[in-house]
Length: 274
Image (cartoon, rainbow, N blue to C red; front, side, top):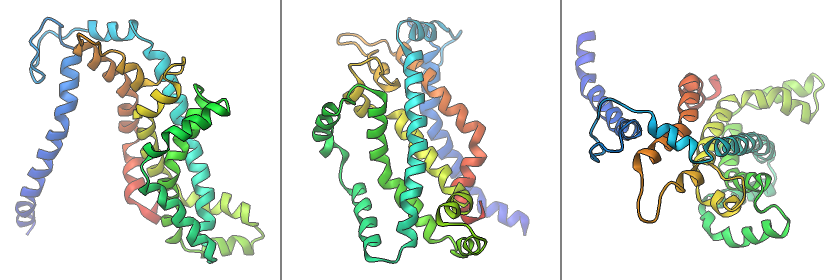
């Protein structure tokens, strides 16, 4: 019986291996070009020996990648922390209140998922300029926060509606007020969805290009994608240096994911068991 089950699952396993190999092609291509001699053939799938570190050195020394990575890290961490804090606080009354305004406010936030962010670029740019936040890291964090809150509130509200209210009732009976109940009882139970929100928000913020280009592109707070874009010249493009810069800047995300992959998987799959 065990042998039969393994045989039946073999096509699915082979298909999953095929998909995994397909997703590895861009990563292998990036690494291959990053370590390739600039005089080598230009075939993106060709693997040349011996590898060289000259492209990595050139990408790091001829551009402000270090400062850009620091800017991206500060912006990403700030956006993730604020998204979790604001999203959880906003979703709690939306999930627990039975009044009519609660459902209206919930659908108002959901409308943010349907409206393209590009529609608000011009008025938002003018607003940030008028309040003096244009070209600053706090201003960019606020823009990213506003763009992520709709989806964050949706995830938190959906999760809280499935969370048994008996936990909160027991805390109230023990003398906890609403604020302490949320901080000590409800918020710890949100760990699975907090992990999902953190990962999704961090990846989206770190990889964002248009928003940082508009709001801090001309200042000294350029992020990683904006700095990488400067590697592309008008008449010539050095692809080994470009892919070396991409490899350097993608390493923090890859290392973080491999170190926390069990937590990430549990966050997406555990539900209330987390």
